[in-house]
Length: 264
Image (tube, rainbow, N blue to C red; front, top):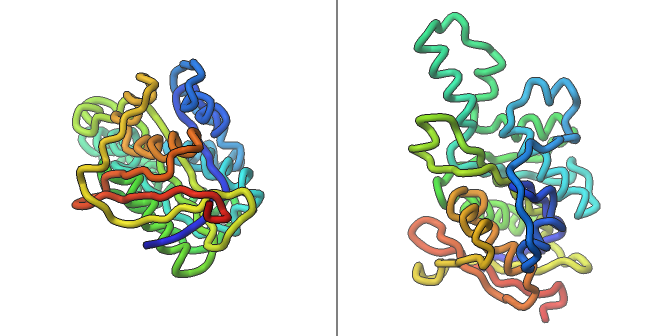
């Protein structure tokens, strides 16, 4: 079992520009809206021009989580988790290679690597802490959370999970099935933090992971975006009276216990 404390949350998705919006929706307040590109104000104007929509989404939720935790970006080691990478950028590269490889942009190429969002974040925040970038298909959020929590507990240092996915153009949208953009960041601490929630992570039985959200639009988002699998955990946090949630994570489930910082 791994034990960490959740000290900050960042969220961006359709009709949601932060954790307060998301928490209200999960608590039953009506809401709607399409996905809008985030401002990604943490990135400089130059880096915003060079970056892709995927990197800007990651930077937005990461900055929100830092603000909520009252910590600087440089304080956190990071785990960036994305199921399929930057599909729009990969599609553009493939089309250019098929048409005329000499036209391939170096900027396109450096944005194609899976750790590009982590690189932009490190530059923006002057962060020299370790950073991992992973992919685990539909289970990317749960696997990313487990990676971040284990690193946080073992190193006894703050770690932030940043999970994000955006739909790609045809035919990537058919293959990957991502319906709308969504990003979530969780700032974790290895020591108790006043007002934070304690999360305990362990492996559990596979049958426990079928979670459904009451809001039909959010449930569609949860099923249609790997990063949005994290909405099940956010729903438990918003409810305040749910003490355990299970998420699919490979051959097992990741079972997450939730309690207050005093263990109640």
